[in-house]
Length: 129
Ligand SMILES: [Zn+2]
Image (tube, rainbow, N blue to C red; front, top):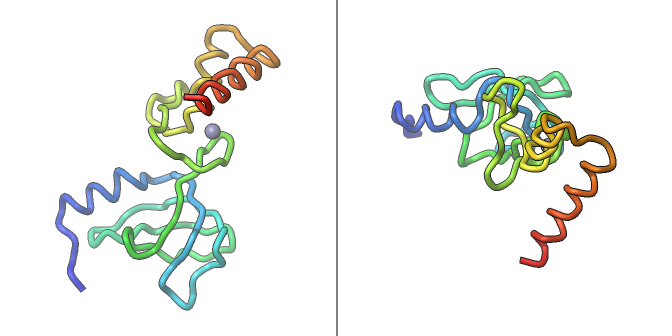
């Protein structure tokens, strides 16, 4: 096994920051939690193993590029795809684009069904582009 460079470990830490929510797709380990299990990133050690507190109690780590997980939006729980937004709550936590729009609309005083209508209009526009 080749150990990752310091830069590669830093990239893995940026991809899976402590506290990030993830869902397991597949893991190359007979002790792996079932696919679909969710967890919270504990930390990434110096050889690039991402340690995760799985919802089933396991703390088995993953190797980026070998095992597969998807990051989840901590607000809505949907997969974080494309370019995530930064939460206005702390300007650090990555959230999905839609939750980012909802935070911005709330900050502008737009709430409830008005927010839903704007989100729906954005979704429809994205599909037709
Ligand atoms: Zn979200």
